[in-house]
Image 1: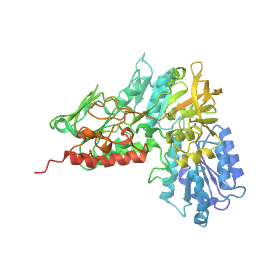
Image 2: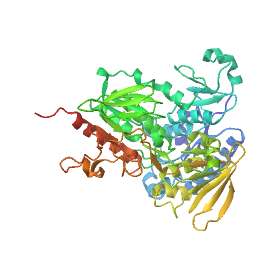
Image 3: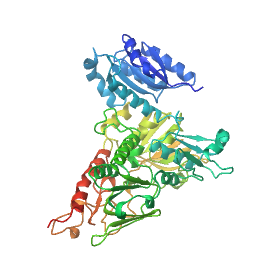
Image 4: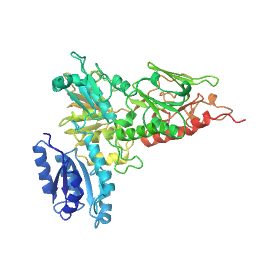
Length: 555
């Protein structure tokens, strides 16, 4: 019988109020009540020693034996992955807020809430369930499983498939074939399959599974799409924030729309463990959840999605003919095209480490791999927000996380809220003016060689994980030469378009390219801000340009 995860309540004077509010959770969680920081610490220790875990600490704003933020610091050391809430009593909520809210920006706790005054305070419980859901998405073995990966020897491909399912919000577990021997026929697994095998609810079994095969199984092929008259109003290439926003606004305004994404919906943003500066989400939101909400919103309005198929070529239409997007799974014809294919992380180009990709070396946040870093020393290379978010997430599992940057500091490239959170986190350190020049290990990463960019001095460090978030390279190899790119391969739009493409001395619209009816939004666009909110804004804004392009000419 699995041990239920625990919720620890802490209050000296208002414990009965808190206990009453959490009765609804007692069926599925082990709710423990304490009156001080020391008692809560002892309860958490007992839970961990018994093989359990604490999902959530909920504390009054005032504790008898220490400051509440010191309490959270101690509990975080005990259970790094637990979520943390201050539930201030209504007599102290306003008075205590100014001194405590700043700690939330630094990641010292996750939410500052008013303690419920009675039953059915759904605003309070909405925050609680959001945080419990966020916690549940980071644990290794979810209770509810929507997909099963079966393999005798997990390898890099297994990890990549697991990470794909994590990015799209489908609970998944890895099983040895012996664990499912009795259920093999029920699952449709043949006698001598080619591993890994992937089973998912209401989908055909996949043998010799790869990320691409799994992605392709989600929505079928482009040739399977139901398109009126064979042509959609707008095709969006890329399912990140810009592409999803374009889809939501296009279909909500009556345009037919198809989104093509070669991997998981959400793009790079979908790998972010927690985005705290996105408008409207004061407690933050994971990139995965943001992407899934946007996808569901787009589906509601009628957007069609295709994943797992890369666009090989864009053939611009001539004389009013539709544009054509070519894939191995069929072509899509569209009156307008939005390029929102985003960017990929730059390669480190240190050959011994490239050989270990998937075995301790990862490009991107690799959310699944973070769980395998428990009690290990890991390194994150990169100075942007994605690197900072990855480091914070890794610190919930790893013994130590070292951020490596070539610049003298993080302040130039990272949002201040993340810089503050990193400074506060005792498991994270920052090593500036440093680059990775070598590394290796026996089938798995074991060490790195780091070079000081100022002195040239090299040091060898033990390492179990290396996460590379090295800036951006646009994914535009499929874009035709008629679409102008800058010297780094990003799509030029608006006034940045070469003057010889201006019409009567007037540049294209801000998000329009050099090809009529082809637009660009998000990180792939030259001069873009490289922030989730900015990409979403561009995706929404481009729809008005699409409408204008598709409108019949005035007499």
